[in-house]
Length: 444
Ligand code: FES
Image 1 (cartoon, protein in one colour):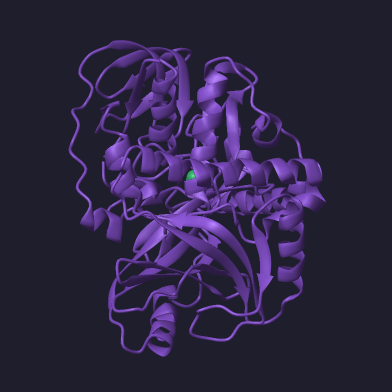
Image 2 (cartoon, rainbow, N blue to C red; image 1 turned 180 degrees about the vertical axis):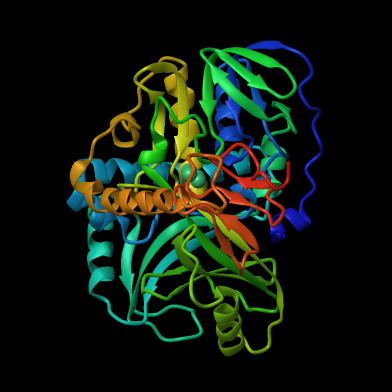
């Protein structure tokens, strides 16, 4: 299943690693976070190498709807309550600066990537109370937020939170340009990381510092990311002949849609569920009905799924991998906000790796303990993992090569999925999403 970005953007191939090498920093993963981190590290004069198991941008960066925004659903009222006003302000500031940094980078380097400034809207067709609150809190935290009653959506809303000066682009066109001066070895799969040695199927790279930017970290101990992160799936339809809606939209109601235009088309996003908890009805059929109703003149061109890493408190993990591994770094758990979070991660990690601190370190630290913010999701995540593991010990079932949970068949996506941490496998068992690193036994 290819996304529109993958189908319309050709990024030149890179060689695979041959033999053993040394570098100052090795980054695992050539997605948006990995490439941007390398880009800023090189600007600081650091020698960097990226290792990519597949192709540049072939992971989740190729499946995003590519909204560049600091508007992350109703996050600011949640953060103010769970981690306090100061951390909520810093979270918002880091992301708003990230939005602005994309604009500067693209203009300064004349990057052709269908970059457009757009306002971002959170809408509801049911109630305005939460939106009013979000607009008020976000504005108080210094973000460009206001509450509005009118939008250009083809249905009426109770209200919307508007963030001005946000943006959208084609992420692979951007990655193609920004990665051009960086050493990247494609089709080079990291098998193991041992101290300062990154062991791949093509050779070993010795590095002073190592960055894990490959979506879900695959080293279980130390770090224990499997205990504090799960994955969610969502669905996108691409429609042609849809007039520009004058903004990027996200509904906050239970069964709401995400909408953004691209080059005369519309990307309609829907549904969000824990990977491995397959919905009763086919999300693509639901979306098709909605598309026919709202945009009767349009044609459906394609559909694809996206998969996002979710942290327990809703804040990404950016910083040192573990207190036991001070030379390892991680950027993960971006939720549905991979574009702004990738930039936040790149700016922070490039400073941390060169020995500097940032005002945001404690907010995004992977070692933080926001008990209040994490309690509910931690309990749910623990329960789902226990269910997956106890199902896995039944004889005759397919087990996940990551930590042994029982696999589930997703008939809509035609994939095996693990309900514990979200690993995914094609129908023949070939691995297509981590943290598992091996395919299911029936392919090998
Ligand atoms: Fe962790 Fe399957 S992804 S057990």
